[in-house]
Length: 377
Picture 1: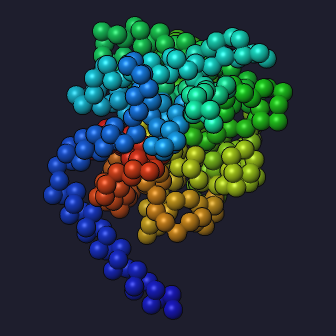
Picture 2: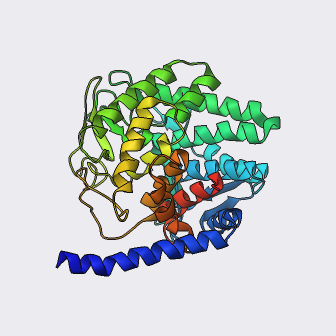
């Protein structure tokens, strides 16, 4: 029976590869990349007022802004600017939205900081409201976008770097646990709380940490990088697959996946919709630890006939469908490791560009667009 099923599936896989290969070969890569970016702008950018634009992580009927989404949007726009597809004004309108929604800390939320409030939406009275508390991933993305913008539009480099430095300092002040040596998941986490030792694996961004160290002159960022990468290595080694969980409990010398429903949902301890970003976050790092984790993930997926939208850490898939949220980061990563035994993933995961950009999937569409503005040959 298994052989019969395989003989049915195999031609479908081959046909899919051929179709994707033909599509990519007959299209200029830059045409695909710029169309992806333009479609993303059309479908996911919302003008709040004459000076502010946000990335819509909700629906057209019920728009939602997230600091994570705003960070991604700023990165995409800065990289698009580098390629001449976006203007400084477009970047600044996204930036102004972040500046207008910075968080306030303290028991009574009276002390303003550079961290972004994690969520905005229309309440049942039709009023646009912003929720207190930050999310570390969004703050890190905004910081790296500012670093990129300073290079793309050098006439405002001092301004962008000053915002980056303030943000970096507040991340260390309000989103860092010195006992674990790792960033927490947001400024809502008190160091004496249950979640103080919780780490989001996709918050391990060695390339970003290095840039923040250079911008601020604060070598503590190197220590954060080394500590968080060491925890990621420990998690990677716990399974033959090399897959890491969305969230982990960490200490100075240990790291272990969390149980289901610890913070976000039933897949908290699996390779799901947070950990799927890890291949992007490690891709440009020169750290041997980052490369170790990255290569283990790529090696595992290069041996699979398909990449699905979620896995248990032993490799058992959680769903039966593919997802650009998982495929886009892998495609991004394999571009940094061409000719090293994973090139089949370059072909197979390019399917994300052989179909229209998703219109009702902010996450998958945004990660796909992030790959597009980065470019490939």
